[in-house]
Image 1 (tube, helix red, strand yellow):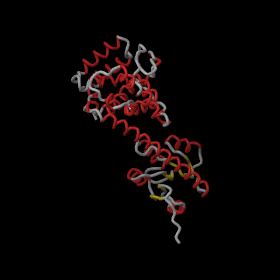
Image 2: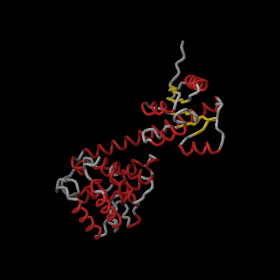
Image 3: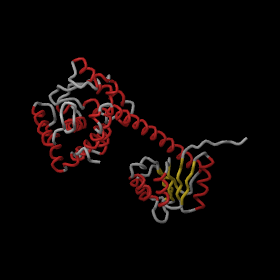
Image 4: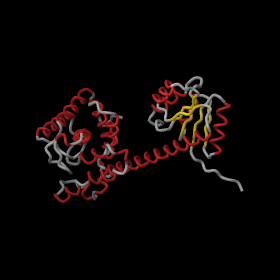
Length: 330
């Protein structure tokens, strides 16, 4: 009876020295891994870009593109940056380690490579990649759910994707950190995900909501926060989901926050959300022009509803790049 070894993951091995590359490849295959073996950096990048890879073992001193440059390229691309990279090196200086860290390497192995150390690090990093993949899948499910809610109303088509783009544009203009920009991009998609808990007769009602219906609708921010709370990568998105319907004077919901009590990212999304709603068609009116929408937002700001600094920043951004907030922008 033959022993069937389950495939544990896909590993790329890049080394121009066949006497090192082949034993590594054979050892990993015996452990149940699928191995892609190449002898140069250019081929390594091609393979990583063309098929799923769970881990890359890169020799540092390859002709052409070195392991450092391949690692830097892998980590700079959104579609490959989460692939763990181990640099395999005979170099022992601190400067070389620093170069590897700056290139984005996840770990190092010194030559000659010890079997036990190699397998322990490979198992650990492949397991980490599996967790990362599961996390990405969970985020994908949430975004798909958010878009399915949006699709119920023909008047909100494309709203989530526009908010995702617009909030990042405004956040960049304000000098926000990369972490905050990621939260804004995600928040633009999932900010109304709690509407999955709102009955359709309320969600799609063409006229004004009565008091009971309004109370049901206002629970969607709390429901959305609860849906996304288990996902730790969404911890910076939760304040956006919960607080994007608050108002500067405390008359918003669900917590009646005032002024700077409202998280900045929630205020940014709120500002852009209002603008997008005003400049797209609704059942009760046609889309307003950019100028008219901004005038109306300033009027509501004077009532104490919106953040004047953010409305001003949005107006300035529109004047500098009027097409950036166009519904036809890609």
